[in-house]
Length: 128
Image (cartoon, rainbow, N blue to C red):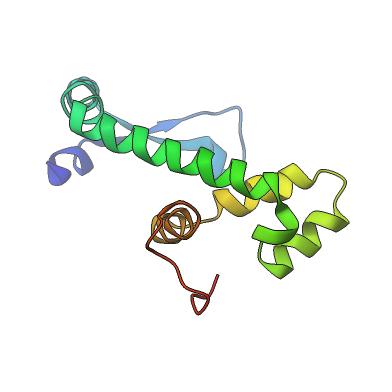
């Protein structure tokens, strides 16, 4: 399929621009563009919106919200030292917490969530 789409790329020229990066644009030929649109619609309906994927998305969203709420409830105690220093220095501390949580990898979010909420997990020797 990749070959099918790559070989269907055409250049579209916009003469109002002199700069080549703006003047020339890549686009798919009409039949391939329609096929890609249908393929995206199918993937969205059958994969993205499937109950198993939606369960994972809901769980991940709940974990993000829970970790954020915990950190903002007691930032001095729960944020890593460097993040807490930024939190104190900024006028919008919630933004610092938001950026901190948004920057977490899935694995780091899971580890943080488990340290905060799982009764048998977490150790004083775990590094944040």
